[in-house]
Amino acid sequence: MANPTVVTAEPNRQELFITREFNAPRELVFKAFTTPEILLQFYAPFGIKMKFNYADFQNGGSYSWTHSDGADKIYCTFKGVIHEIVAPERMIQTAEMEDLPKGGQVCLEIFTFEELSNNKTKLIIQDVFRSIEDRDEMVQSGFESGVVAIFEQLDELLIEGKIR
Amino acid sequence: MANPTVVTAEPNRQELFITREFNAPRELVFKAFTTPEILLQFYAPFGIKMKFNYADFQNGGSYSWTHSDGADKIYCTFKGVIHEIVAPERMIQTAEMEDLPKGGQVCLEIFTFEELSNNKTKLIIQDVFRSIEDRDEMVQSGFESGVVAIFEQLDELLIEGKIR
Image 1: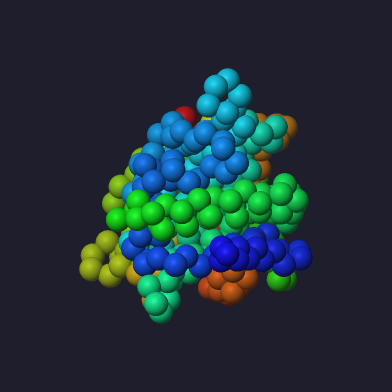
Image 2 (image 1 turned 45 degrees about the vertical axis):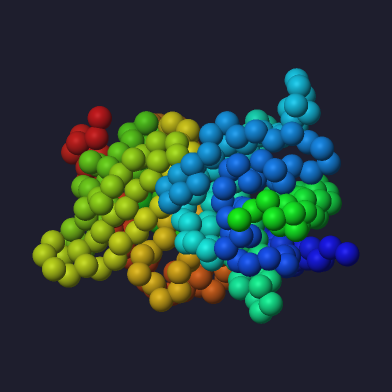
């Protein structure tokens, strides 16, 4: 059975936390979340296709990716900048869904990779929003099932030894 | 008398707002906060010297600046990335003070420039922190007097017609 994904969103706060353990060393989990070629293999759930419009995962870099059906139907495009990557423990980026009616709905996203015993890794994602409303909208969007799915896809890549 | 600077920091929130009107058109106020050569002329209070280590104020750009006494004494260095610039209404960036004991204490900073009547402009800065503690630390640091001073320095530049 897959490790549980825990989403914590306290009432009246503009942040949420996603916590998930992986049965793999920190270097590999860190690599998975900071390497475009690997992200393409797991960061879209439910058969959705992902492509990067640009991807420069380094300090001061930026990225943009699109989820689609692989043909004409685009589900969403996200863009952001990379504030800091401290390998293998932390990545700080911004993330904003494009083409929303109200511009500027950006989120600050901090990935922390903690080394556990037995070669396991705890990933903690902190998402900080511009408002409680933005945070609540995200919680109510049902994003959690997608996150659970992509983490399980990453489990598969790790088990199959596809991340080295 | 200078226009008032209003800092709003509600209890138990991880954000603060700084609001200030300028008696100048929005294009000029926007330009002042997004142009390194102009920032150097007002963005350090109390005779402190400012220099940019790098400055690329555009979408996906990044910056780093240092406040010092102009000789050996460095007061602080800040770095960040530019998530988005939408001229003349918005700039979204990250900001982090370097060399703190705990890394990753980043802040998400949104500058909104609102056009008022009579060629005036309202600047609203929203600072979103990773925790209530980080926010409270900033409030208690006495940053407000510095902010009031730099806004008055910007008033001077605008009155003297030095920003066109």
